[in-house]
Amino acid sequence: MNIAIVHDWLSEFAGADKVLFQLKQIYPNADIYTSIYHTKKVKQFTKYKVHTTYLQNLPFSKKFRSLLVPLMPMAFEQLDLSKYDLVISNSTSAAKGVITRPGTC
Image (tube, rainbow, N blue to C red; front, side, top):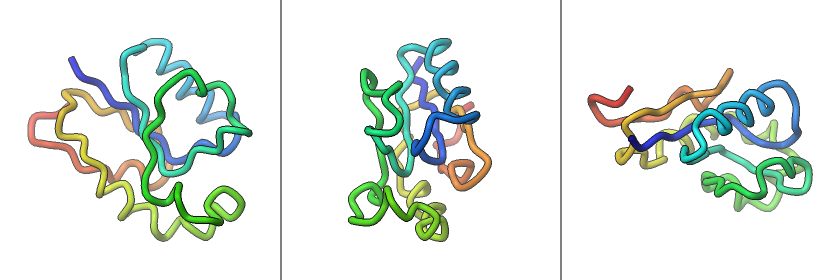
């Protein structure tokens, strides 16, 4: 079974990020998707492949994440999650807007 875990952003290791870390322990083969990943602040995920959106490449994305919140729904909608049978959304924000194929749990 192909599993993806979708998370709003990784910019500090706080509550939701700790939940993501535990989900990754439960589903070790799951792929992680997030809008922005600040590798210097969230070192707990450096051994994993973390897929990011185009927002990651904007020059101010890590410093001024709050300015990007209006763009996040569109960024998550553009993710291609069609190969996954199960998509887990660990989100309080835009990551809930990912688009999956019919039949995805």
